[in-house]
Length: 398
Ligand code: ADP
Ligand code: MG
Image (tube, rainbow, N blue to C red):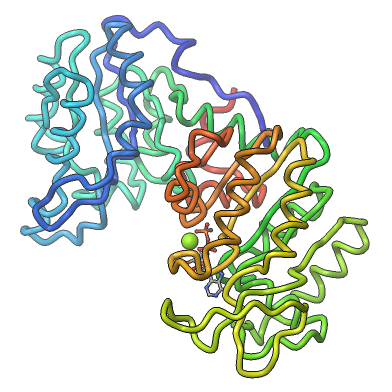
């Protein structure tokens, strides 16, 4: 699935109306201020490139999930994003009062070369998520070139993320999408070996397809997080009162069998950090064995496990990580997760992180710059690693 996509630098943009689908779905505080501008910053290389090439730049995004009541207009406006973008670019950003209609058409017609117009929240119209043809055509009528740089929504076939592409003359991926597809694609298509996949997080059931796809490709699969206890329980290892998905034991056995049949080095924790309850204030008990005593629950991988995983990460040429190793939001159970992040930072391997909570953990550890790639798309990155085609990427393949 690492097919080549056409990218924005391959097109002549001068004087053209370049419609860039960005992901400005940023978190806002109660006063409507942007609390984390990472998504806006991630789109800057593409926006700056288009400005530099004298395009007439039209940006579009969704923000949150407006339900269509009138008060939503203010709550879900892209105004705060427009303001932040303007500060980051050091130029004026014009905010349209809608994303389609006569007013927008006029604003686009009046837009000079090298200037930026941000359309209002796409999800103020039902046609966006419904991918309605009439809405696709309305959006497309604003554009000579359609550029998709919103990796976070690339797994959705919405009007702006895929549908409108049918009605524009030229289309391309932005630099963010290009980087995402390059690194995630490299993990799947031609990983340098040894290829180590680390999987954790809350549930086996969320990660079945990711597990199955990676078992066919990785040399080692290292399991942590709550999902480890479902695997251990499936093998008959006592896990005390750890979180186990009782209805997934059979599936876990099947995955263990698949790993064995494929000769994959499939690692489960050999020790644990436990407590009687998942609370920051609970007593931290290191269980120096694979079996967990009655009354305790596993909340993090133990030090021996971390050391084993660390050795494999340091010896790898490719590492893909999804899913925290423990309840890392609470300090007593964060060492496994941050330890894995640190080992990845120190490894000479191509290191790629996918998944919303995993990316947040790397951010919190201050190690984003020491990974080769931290995906900006939580759900999209996992669907990609499952081996599924993302509509917003597929449409860019030549
Ligand atoms: P991602 O978003 O990176 O795909 P997930 O959503 O699958 O990751 O899982 C992240 C969540 O799993 C975190 O909130 C973390 O606290 C939780 N988690 C991991 N291990 C445990 C555990 N042993 N007990 C309880 N929660 C856990
Ligand atoms: Mg998550």
